[in-house]
Image (tube, rainbow, N blue to C red):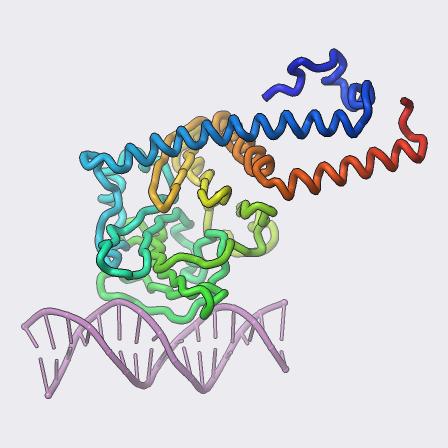
Length: 300
DNA sequence: CGAGTTTGACCGGCGC
DNA sequence: GCGCCGGTCAAACTCG
C-alpha cells in the first residue's frame, strides 16, 4: 500500500520525484502499480467472499432471517439468534426462495430510525428512489405500513414495504420484492462505478432527520459491499461491516478506526477497479502536467 | 403547473 | 357466501 516502495527518497515530500523522469513515464509507473495493487486486492476479496459463501452454505449455520415476509415486522427475536448481526443497525436478509417458483426475490431489511419520527420518514435510504403508492394500517401492527414502488417503475418491478417494528418502534422493517434492473441512482453521491453513498449530513440540508443510516454501498463487478456506520449509535466504539454478497449477509463488529481503514480501502479498490475512472483520471492528470510543462511552470 | 404524496375506495385471496 | 385483511388504485391535495 505504501507509495514509497522502491521509490525515490523524496517521494513523501510531494511532486518533485515526479519529474526525476518524464511525467508520462511516472504516471505509467503509478498506473502499473495501481493495477498490480488492484489485482492483489481483488484476489484478497475473492478469497474473503469464497470463505463467506462456504460459511453460508453450512447447513448447521443458523439463519437470522428465514421467515415469511408477512411476519417481518416483529424484530426483537431475530437479533437473538443472530449474534453476528446484533450490533448492526441494518440487517439484510433473503427469504428462502423456493427454486421451483419464479417468484420475485424477497428481502427484509431492518433499519434503526428515530422512535419519534413521523411515519413519513419511513422511506429507508437504500440508494434507490421510491415512489409511495399506498399506506395501510395492518392488523398486527399499530404503525402504518407504507408501500413504495421503484421510481423507475414500470420498467423496474421492485416494490418495498416499510413499517415500524411493533416491538421496537425505533426500528423500521423494510421488505423488498424483486430486484432492480438498473443501478442505484439517488440524490446521494453516485460514483462512476456504481458506488453510492448516503450520509446523515442531509440533516443540515433540511431533510427530515428521521433515519440514522449512514451507509456506503459499493457495487463492484457485480458484488455489493455495504459499509454501515449506523451502529455507532447503538454501541459507542463499535461499527459494523455488512457484506451482503449475492444477497446474503455477513456482518462483523469492528472498531471505528478499523472501519475507517476498511472504508478507505474499499473506496480505493472500487476506484482502482474502474478502468474508466483510472483512464479518465490519468488523462486529466497527464493533460494538466503537460499544460504546466508547456507553460513553463515546472522546472525540469 | 407538474411531480410527488395522501388517503379513502376498491379488489382479490383466504378462512370460516 | 360472507367477512376480514393485505395490497393497489386513483382522485384530491401539497409543494416547489
